[in-house]
Length: 131
Ligand SMILES: [Zn+2]
Image 1 (cartoon, rainbow, N blue to C red):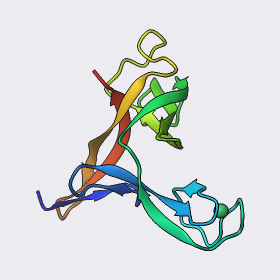
Image 2 (image 1 turned 180 degrees about the vertical axis):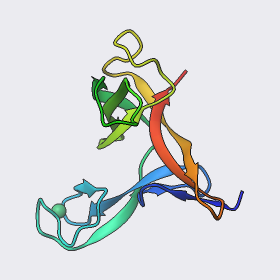
Image 3 (image 1 turned 60 degrees about the horizontal axis):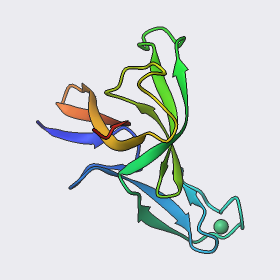
Image 4 (image 1 turned 30 degrees about the horizontal axis):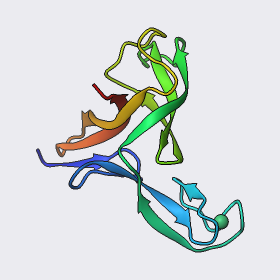
């Protein structure tokens, strides 16, 4: 493999794959996008924090209609990772209410999204049930 790059810059693949948030040094609010200032307190100080790779499903939607080329159904969820809400799809689970429930324990999982001409693999992430 020529290498792998994460689909989003807050997904870190080195070592054990995990998510990294930008935490406001004043009020502790956490963001995944790059910001100049905190939405809560307007502080401009941020530090990187590693999120736990395990969490609980806080809310979810079983998506049955999507853009052409997007396989459905899938489960769009908000996962609480140590107090930080992460929007992601649930993967490696049957997308129906019998297999997905609020409070379900899940863990971060990465999957290949395709390879470019140089052989660099794009890597996406989702959450899968902890078995
Ligand atoms: Zn703040």
